[in-house]
Image (cartoon, rainbow, N blue to C red; front, side):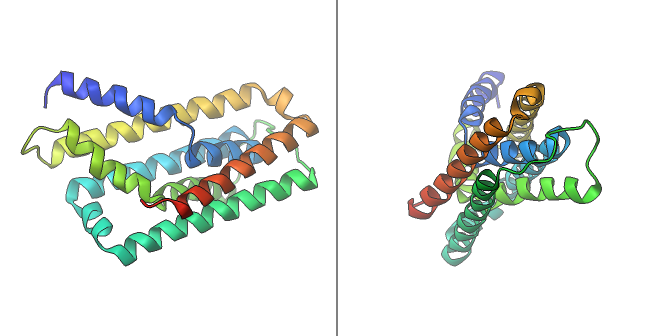
Length: 209
């Protein structure tokens, strides 16, 4: 694989990553709920899932899953339900309008950190578009006969770039914490994020992936 081909992949991956999607919404939600540390763990959960799916693509497992229609549909509808669940939770939070301090700069306990990681991981791993992305896009940047190593390199690169972007998002939200701590702003952000999660859920449910 040439450096120029790898550079083309980097440009394409950055464009895809910068487009807001379910992962962006889940990380935003968790950063608003639990501060920068929970948001960071959520971003790491997304990256963990991306890395796992990159490895699945490298070993051919993702191709098997997409061909097994019942399994593929089960993953899709699990993602639909999970995004809807998170969306409803966030909208309810906006309606109640009761908030603890946004971020007191203390690390969350292990349970909160695990909850953040789990939400990021599950929201990504149950998105069948990610599997299709790795199957449809990765081969276009690989030379004929490319081995496991190069597929894994590209999958890892995508995971690292995605993590870097989400960490920037978390840092940006943290930097604006004095503004975001205002009740009206929090309610507006929760309502917007919840609506986005519900919208992603509905779109995933109606799209033919």
